Length: 279
Image: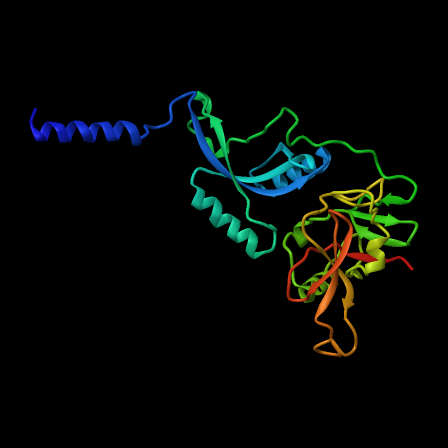
């Protein structure tokens, strides 16, 4: 056998091993998706999924057992057949503060004949109920749903926006920009919206709950639990330890996964849930 024939045979063997043909009907292929959020309760995962779908996003959830923590429902955003494309979109989300950590997971799908020509429109679901809205009982007694996107708290005489992730406040903002957005916000015929104080936030928190750590019945929708929300309350260590005495550099924030109150620089980013006083 000549050297030329041996080289040709070796080249064909390499092709067979490493060059994969086009995906055929019924075959499996990989895709990548961004791990956007995790929820302990299925209803909260469904709310997040439905909110993103309303914005035209490819989104789904999958159940996962997290060692030492139990069962969670993970919400995934996007479907990319190239990992670099998934990373590029994650970078965009990270720039606006919509993701808190780097999480891109790989999944396997079976390509069915009727779907092979239009893969971009396929919607993924782990279980029959994935992405389906779960009806929750209306909040009673303390909270009044005003049917205009606002909630009235009869205990504190405060009015909150009901949706914790409205399109108006889709991205995390710096504290200064968050204040401006509240000042320019109009809903329910009112224009006196503002950031809530630490004490106003604490009136909604139940430290015995998780994800979100909010009192029940919880009248809010699409609450973001894995990223902080701004308060209006500024933070100072003391008069002597503030770099700019007349203007503190940090502000209190609330993390609704655990209900903890923290503080961070005003130039950092957090989400927004406006409130207004009824008095």
